[in-house]
Image (cartoon, rainbow, N blue to C red; front, top):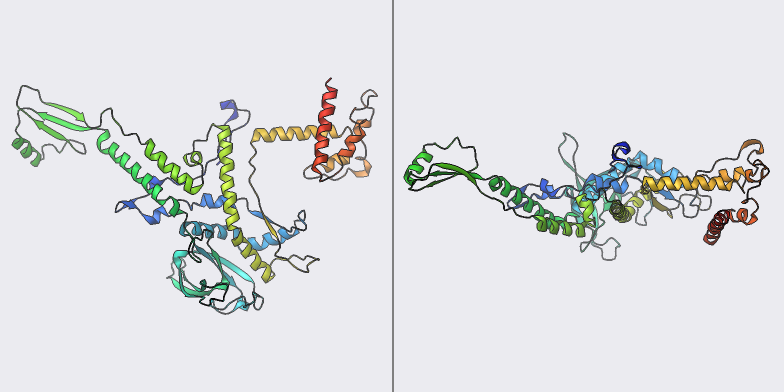
Amino acid sequence: MDAPCSSSSHSFLVPPRIFNAEIPDPSQLHISRGDSVISEASELLDKPKLVGDIFDNWFKVIDPDKPEDDALDKAVQPALLGLNAKTQLSRLIQFERRYGTAVMMCAYTRQGGETWESPVYNEVGMLVNSPELLQITPYPWTRVNIKIRDESQSSLRYGWPIFYDIARQGSGISSTEAKVHWTRIIHAATRIDEAVYEGESVIYAIYDDATGFRNARWAQYETLFRYGSGFPIIHLPNATPEQVAQWIGAGRFTDINARGFMVTTGVGDEAESITFGGVQDVTLNPDSYNKLSLIMMSIASRIPQDVLMGVSAGRITGSEVNERAYFKFINAEQSSVEPIVRELIDRLIDTGQIKYEDSRRGGVSKNYVIEWNYPQLTPEQSQAQINYLNSRAQTERLEYMTIDEVRAKEDPPLPPRPDGEGDVIPGLSPNRGGEVSPFASNPERRELEKPTDDEDSEDEFANSVLKDALESGR
């Protein structure tokens, strides 16, 4: 979440950025029989924002043998776009986080078989009749029923479902059950523990603490509502208890607008009075209860407490640390869902819908790398300093490099100037009263600027720049 501030009103050179993971408030849960409603609690950590951060910046598909060539990625992305993969994968992972397991049903053309029960891959893993993948639809585990499993102990899929009975339901249409062969299913379960194919919901790790947090807050609110504002105490010194009971039964006190009241009696010379009593000058300190719940939820969810509480604002160092910690958590989640993404891409490769020819292999290889696109985490002030230093470095390079060589170092690289205009070194031109730049007299500088992947050479170049700067300052 970006929170830009007005630089003029707050005297900031650069608007600060405040990052906060959007975690739902457990106080929104309702209570049934002394506990939170499970269907509402299941929404806690499967928020679209958290899942959205996993897929928000998407990814690139890289050929490891040609990492600089984006031809494979350009072939993959249109195929994924045609299936609306970003939206459907986000929904799949949202279901998977909520229930522990979810499935993606893959619809193929008729070449893949007339019914959902027909397998699209044979026993050796080869696609049957070359169908095309038309549609992908995610379903939560609550809509899936497993009746038939692989019982052959020599099978690699021993114990796994052979058919998934999925309750399909459209808008305004009664639910129908489809019996789907496992080769048409992408099975999503990233947190499998003791079960064979069913994963654990993210809710299980924090359910008790989230429920306790909710109940503690509910008790605090009720205490404040019932007693915090006090209640009227009516003192009638000359009335008897029988008279008070009679007046209450007759509705004499119905005009008192309070949740409750107290009537006291006695014999004496006291005057009739009305005061307010209740919790006076004493309140329950909820910090210890709330902190315990937040600590346990932070441990279970791996989200820092400051991020959960949203208290990083104004603390630049802490904000950056929390930001890095949160996206490190997102990075771990991306690694866990990567096999699901790969299975979808592999299916598109098998059907030939990814059009990419590798001359060395004669087709598309599944030996690709998924490279996640990470958000720009550099603060604006640091980025401004980097841009300034890059511009200064480019200006200094003109003292000992040609214009075209400097243009080639831009990001992205700029083309050479036409008609050889860029094949000159401005630093060697006597356009400053016959003075030639001291940088141009250093032949080692141009040698160090040659393209190289050697980190030691880059260090030598940096030391050379520092040396020149120190000498020019003497």
